[in-house]
Amino acid sequence: MPSESAAAVSAFVEGAPPGELADVIADVKKLTVNEPKLLDSITPAFQKYNEEQLTIVKLPGSNKNVLISSYNSLGDGRYYDTGSQRSFSFDHQTQEASDVQPYTPDSEHSDLISSLLKSLSTHATEHYLTSTSTVCFHPPTSTITLLLVSNKYSPSNFWNGRWRSAYHFSPSSSTLTGTINVDVHYYEDGNVRLTTRKEIQETNLDDGSSQGEGKEALLAAEVLRKVEGVERRYQEELNKGFAALSEGEFKGLRRQLPVTRQKVEWEKVGGYRLGQDIGGGRSR
Image 1 (tube, rainbow, N blue to C red):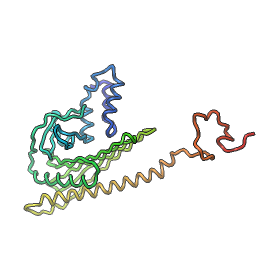
Image 2 (cartoon, helix red, strand yellow; image 1 turned 180 degrees about the vertical axis):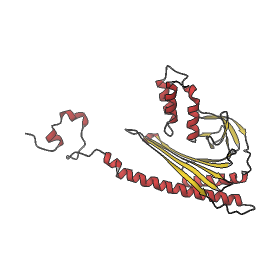
Image 3 (spheres, rainbow, N blue to C red; image 1 turned 90 degrees about the horizontal axis):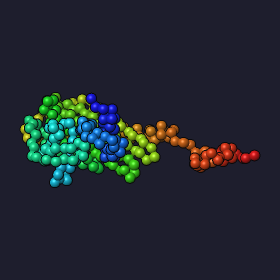
């Protein structure tokens, strides 16, 4: 059973905001100087964070980003990338890849996966400024998983954000399910974090029931048409929600100016004459 310290640090790691894991680790090291090996004992927490957050990493000798997830895991700290047909080792604490080797996933749906990978890449490029995507086959459930992550970090402006999509397509039943997660952290003179999750209910697709060359490309196009519609509608929902928060709850939280229409100088508040200086009244 992990110690109380290990459990607390694991919670910090697993809950790290987008793009801020290194900052969390640096703070933890300062707080646990008497336990220098503590971080090495919570590898499962780092693995959970990287797989759930769809952490991206560049392979040695390559400029291409690849994803870390439970869907493309080979076990023992190794993962594979369908697009580059490579497998690699991944250090969950340092978030570095190594020991790259050729790897070709074995799947009866290789043509469909290739078409989905191409269509998903086109979709990501058209709709996200920066993104990384991949497609994986899960043999135990015979499903194909489409993963997409888009990160935007602006620490100089005190905010970071991440969009994650995961869709599961069953070739046997032509059904699509999935989830969308959005995580935004704003921390200028405060600490505000938005986390949302959208469950995509099972959707039946028209497989075209056509045979012959090109049917995989047609099916992939249909899958991405559904994905594009789902993501567009959810982004519209988020925009409406943000507008409502700005004009509603957040506006109600703002401190109103006093009748003088000037901000209160709080460091001098003890010396104010209530009636004259704040209320605008006359002193006697």
